[in-house]
Image 1 (cartoon, rainbow, N blue to C red):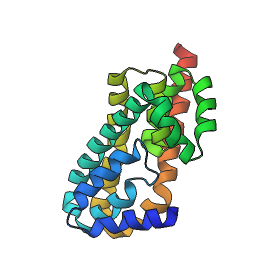
Image 2: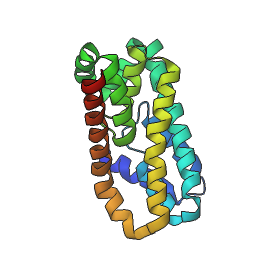
Image 3: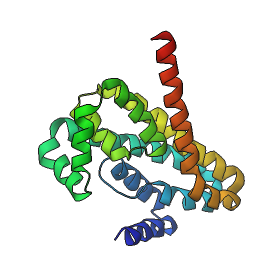
Amino acid sequence: MLRKLYAWTLSLAGRKAAEVWLAVIAFVESSVFLVPADVLFVPMAIARRERAYRYAFVATVSSVAGGIAGWLLGYYAYATIAVPVLEFYGKLEAFERLKSQVTEEQLNLLLVTSGLAHLPPIKIVTILAGVVHIKLWHFIVSAVIARGLRFYLLAFLLRRYGEAIQAFVEKRLGLILAAIAVLLVVLYIAFKMLFG
């Protein structure tokens, strides 16, 4: 099923309404969808490199809006909507464990790591942020920074290097972004230990 969903999402890149589909996929990825918007973003940005930054803007705005929808689900409709979604993905037990253990400080780090490198998946963190009542403005600022950094970095690489970097982006960019996210967490912890 996942392979078919991935192939369907990838097929949207060649359509006239690809930009609209990018907005839709980026929106639902941040709240309920399994396939990342990168699957659509990468081929679109390679096919029309002059529009890479425009696509990054669309993906960032839509992803943040989807994140807000996830936050609202967690805040207002956890039992009625979010629980069935988490059950569908088999993530409810892990989510409940995370919810009972996470501190506000840890959640701030998760907002950055999930938005930047999908660690953990962004839909989990957006719902969690609503459940634990993180301030909406704080959530939005974190999402804009993390998601914007991800999509604009992709746009820069794809615009500059095109198809030559596609395989690298698809296979290794996630690892690089994960390493950056881990580095940010280590720096944060070091800062707290030295000055906290």
